[in-house]
Each structure stands twice: as C-alpha cells, then as structure tokens.
Length: 236
Ligand SMILES: [Fe+2]
Ligand SMILES: [Fe+2]
Image (tube, rainbow, N blue to C red; front, side):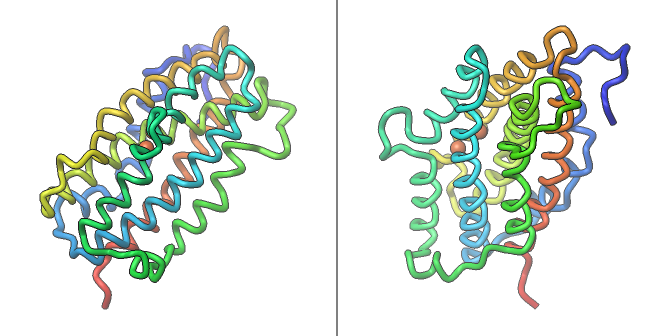
C-alpha cells in the first residue's frame, strides 16, 4: 500500500503502518510472553538474535556511508550505542553474550547452535533493503531513502521485540539485565529513524522510496520472527 496523494507522510503514519502489519501479530510475540523457555531455547534464541543484530550493525554503517550529508547524523548515535558509546566493553553484542554466559552456554555450546531457516532467509534479504545494489530510478531519493525506510521499520519493531524478550527472560531473573535497556534504547533509535525518514519525506519527496523500504522490511521481519520462533519451539 503506497501513500495516497492526499495522505500526508508523517511519523505517525509509519508507526501506524507498523502496528497494523502482520509481522506485529506474529505468534513469536505471544510465545515469548506466555511460554516458559528452557535455558537451551533461550540460548538458541539469543544466538539467532545475535546473528541478525550483527549483520544489521554492519548494514547500518554501510547505509550511513551513502546517506546525504544532512541525514548521516540520524544514524550516528544508533551506531555509537551498538559499539558501547566509546567503550567497546559495553557493546551490545557483549551484553547479549553475557546473558548466554549467565545461562551456562559456553563458546562451544554457542557454536553448536543452528541458525534457523527463517533467520537465514532474513539475512539474505535484508541487505538488499539497507544497501540496495541496483537503485530504482522511479523512486525519488533512491537507495538512501529506501534504507531510511528499512532502518525505521527495524528500529520500531525492535521496541516490540525487546519488550517481549524481557518478559521471557524474567523467568531467569534477567529482566533488569543491561541488554534489556534496549526497551528504552530502541525507543530512542525509533525516534531518530523516524526523523531520518522524515528527512526524505519532506515536501513528499522520497515518500514512495521510504515506504517501499519500510514495507519490505516489515515483510522480511516475518521471516526473522519465523526463524526466532523456530529457535524456541520445543523439539518433537
Ligand atoms: Fe543494540
Ligand atoms: Fe536499535
């Protein structure tokens, strides 16, 4: 669904699109909130989450490199957070891995965890939205505007992901772990990415490209959530 001529593009419009997209109702969220995970399932979830977050960090850096000069600043704080705000010991990957250690998943255990099919499919597709190789000439704003839409969809959905994961990890006494500061951090990233999207949507320029990246990323998130759910399903 593309913007109609009489619809003003706005942060609210994108937020509403995300709330009404099927990925928002994915069974992963209910499963995380209502089922008790075993330690093995929790580690499997984290290993798969780490695989997608690791790629997204690099894609974010690549996207920053081709943003127009005034738009780069909307991404820098996000990347700086990921890498520990100047202290790599506080990086987000380190926080995630400290939860795995807490759950008793050593290095050998982690490397034995499979990356699920859905997560692998997500990893293949998301790169084309953050860093499109072939720009779409029809779309004003080009690949930078498509990336802005993709980043915004990712950050808005990350808020929901962390809220649900925080409930699941409360069972292990980890609801207050530093990694779950993401519930707040992702709200800030959401605001910054909405400002990034708004930059490309000024005067309706770039709206179609932003919305294309946004919608396609929400569609791709269904694969991610399929894969994360697979990671925590009881083995039969
Ligand atoms: Fe993070
Ligand atoms: Fe984020």
